[in-house]
Image 1 (cartoon, rainbow, N blue to C red):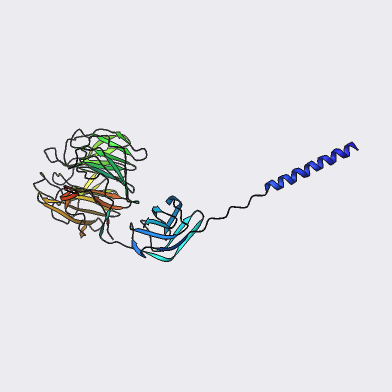
Image 2: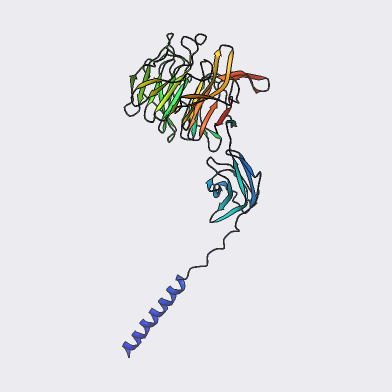
Length: 416
């Protein structure tokens, strides 16, 4: 009898436990989904890449990071958002089609298509750099970011170590760590994911900037520095600087290897001794041309040469398409190069732009630089297009009662 009672108790315990586990294993019902977003309209049915579009609807997230907006599948940058309105820019690479907004797991799609217009041979004004007015500044591009700094804050101040990053996707500027070298730097280049400032006219200070850490590191001093108006450019793995004047106009070229922090002299520029030249890089070659053979007021040039990084060799190409000049600017977009602006004489400032096709070795005149006639403009070849900005031109009003010959605007060029 005692054994039977014990067995009954054990069975009752197991049944109770099983029932308890079963009860607690039942998942609670999922919370109801929030109302799905809807798109009621968007301002303008067509516009260009980089233009601002306002999307109106319901149940968007006021946190713009939670709104995923796409133009025919291409993700856009959200500038601001409320629950009923999202402001975005048409992203690079976007094509005509539907606009969609995803909030959480739910997506709204526009009833109508948005038409992406194609710019052709056109300059578009971008956001100016905060605290602009930089004369003799240095610059470089890394991927889709542009970097500008040092120089002179003429006429509102003296030398500055300020350093800024421009995001080509969001059309916005962010101040970064001050440049660590001499403030009056006038040239820069980038190698891979790092940027470099070269102080060529003084001590030859040479500094590396790492965007990942926002830090500057001093590198090997420039060889044969103490020169004005040189050129600087870079291949995928090496940096270069040369030409310019030390009182005597130069034609030497030096190569920097970041893996060993060393400089090596390369083949001299085959043209005339040249100062104030311009350059741009396309693939495995750099193209160098224009400049002055003696001084800023002497013989201006339209010579044009190609340098092969791999073979350390120069090849003469068709002369620059415009009139001879110095203090011009160069940049590249995909497989084409662009060169222009500058000065033909001390009183003649230029704004013409020429496109170079390396396959046909020909020049074609394009739309004048909308920013106006200027020289010492900064040029950028980024993964998001070609940009020009800053420079020195005619009097430019910067504040009530204050004018300057120094520009602070930035422009993007759309070749096609």
